[in-house]
Length: 156
Image (cartoon, rainbow, N blue to C red; front, side, top):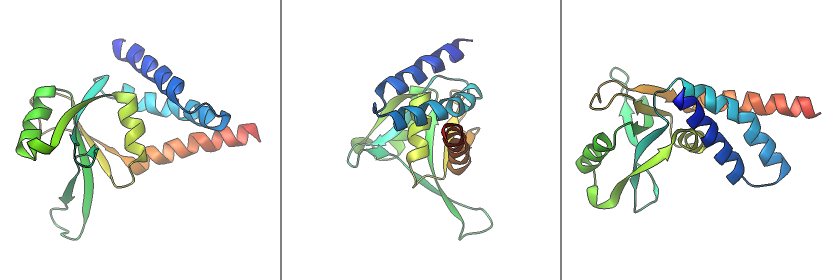
């Protein structure tokens, strides 16, 4: 139940910090249930992302398909444990990166807006970096757009 309350607080914060124009407020209210539904499938209210300080964006990895070498996807990783995130950061470019702690709702909200990303891999269990939960950006974006479309139809 604790994650439910944390997500509710995070959604309230997202709404409070969204631009105050009517259309944006309604859009954020429309997508909030999508973000919460996804959030409730996960275990933690906060995650750590490796962030590139030089360019002020998340660290992104390009993965190649094992059998189809021309097929790649860009992913970012989110860690439930700061130590795991920091160990991965140190393997990359430690002098140009940091581990940023993000609330889950804000993480999901940002993720959907990052067109260069295909997926977000969340490591739910500390020290188990061989098992991650993949979220596909286009799937979440489609759910998001469906909610906004319902809102438009309701208001029309």
